[in-house]
Image 1 (cartoon, rainbow, N blue to C red):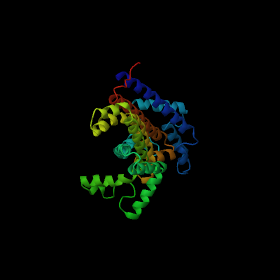
Image 2 (cartoon, rainbow, N blue to C red; image 1 turned 180 degrees about the vertical axis):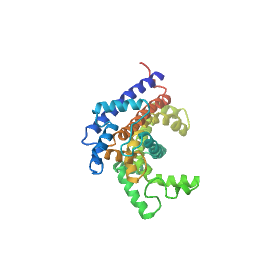
Image 3 (cartoon, rainbow, N blue to C red; image 1 turned 90 degrees about the vertical axis):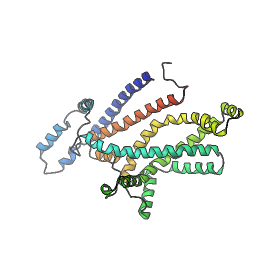
Image 4 (spheres, rainbow, N blue to C red; image 1 turned 120 degrees about the vertical axis):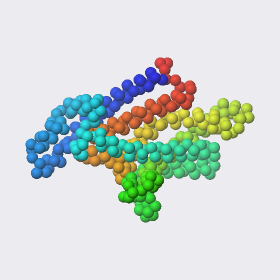
Amino acid sequence: MIRFILKRLLIAILLLLAMSFITFMLMRLTPGNYLDTMRLDPQISKDTLDHYEKLYQLNKPPVVQYFSWLGGLLHGELGFSFYYNIPVTKIIGSRLGNTFILSLAAFLLTWLLAIPLGIWAALNRNRGVDRAAQFLSYIFLSLPGFFVAMVLLFWASRTGVLPLGGMESPDFDDMSVLGKAMDLLKHLVIPATALSLASIAGLQKIMRGNLLEVLGKQYIAAARARGLPENKVIYRHALKNALNPLITLLGYELAGLLSGAAIMEIITSWPGLGSLMLTAVRAKDIYLVMASMMMGGVLFLIGNLLADIALAKADPRIRYDKK
């Protein structure tokens, strides 16, 4: 396992380098740069523009700029933000926690609802409960998350039950600890629900299919023939094997929630990396874009590595060795 983890970490570093290089080249090869907006201001002199161009290394070839940024990354520096005029690490640090809160809330909501619903549907196969669950799953899978968010925001605007956006209320600082927690939960309802509905529908169908397949295996029939209680057969023998294929989806689900959260943050005005990325792309703030992309890549690779390790722990038949 240790050898496998080290090998995966080495591959992850190479993948991150390739991803960062492609992203950097795409951003640099597109027309214009950040200073183009400053050139439109007649009050900014050419000497000032030349100074900024040299300061931000925009006068150097793209390859030279990339390796200069890579050298700073080895020292823990992600570059300097043109738009915000502060180091990128400070901006990312102030927004990363907000995105993590939203992604974690959607992740927990997805798995805590999808797994029980899938089990319930499988144990009530072809009954009214199962048919209703599958019908709703098809509906939620066909609805884009941003459309669900806009519908929920419209409903909130008409009823006033939930906040219309943002992360906290204007009087958040004056609230008690419990009041702050409840206020945060209220602001999380719309973006987390819109972000997780499609995932709940998809995972519920996968869980249902896996459990039905396992319940048809011969060892399940043998366990029932030995007189084991039905609950023990289902939750101790069948469920464990039915969950194994879902463990491999953890890494992809984590990265998918992160990318989906970016769009959801823009729609619901959640102050996370999504709105920050949109601002950075519009302003051609290349180092801020690079940092945001690196965060997504790191989470994706870490999620897949953790999923492989968890799968090996859950299933003793899986071993990551030379053979």
